[in-house]
Length: 95
Image (cartoon, rainbow, N blue to C red; front, top):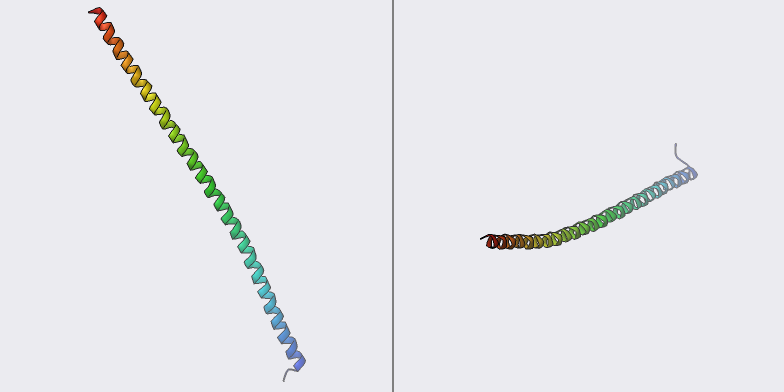
């Protein structure tokens, strides 16, 4: 039983329509996934920038602590020398 030309034309049209619809859905899903991936990358970039800033702040804090420690050590050494000098002077005064 042969198909008429009209039926054949309708079937071909339907096949092309379904292929076009699937193609449209595929492109739409691709665009959606691309937007999601872009958002993930932007969020990741923000996290990286925050971590860089945190590391800089930590490094700056460490540098500040080193300077404070150096000043404190210098002052402690000065105090030790003054105590030594006082002990020497008090020993000479007694003797």
